[in-house]
Length: 182
Image (tube, rainbow, N blue to C red; front, side, top):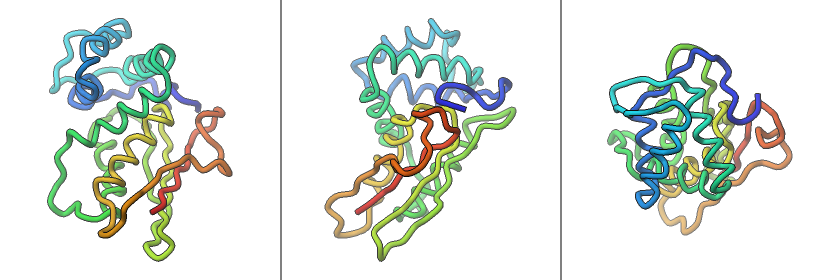
């Protein structure tokens, strides 16, 4: 499945997760609320659950109206506003925690995953496989913030890029693979 197409039409997303989308870029909060309303999510409440397709349609509208850099910025902002348990204290644990959060905020069917498929401190390389219907640049944003927030000591720079040698949701595949290097 490509971006914006849910694996299962019954999947729901937590209101708390959608609020992260609304609050990601404060100066665009009203615009984000309008996008959600146009796509079937009105009167957003953190404790409620909403159809994933409505949420994905909102992301699609953002991508079409504001561009992929805005999707990247929203993805980057999501973990910036999140609290993490004290045991999430390394890059490896942080990357593993992305899937835990994803699973907690979606229910009622096949949602996909975020999988850390390789982590090698000596090679300064991690590889994440993301099989979900969210936009690729949004995922890259989430991974980027997590990687920078929990980068290894004495590392000045950490980069996240889509692996061009692998299939990509940008080209209609089910997964995107991201290389995290430092």
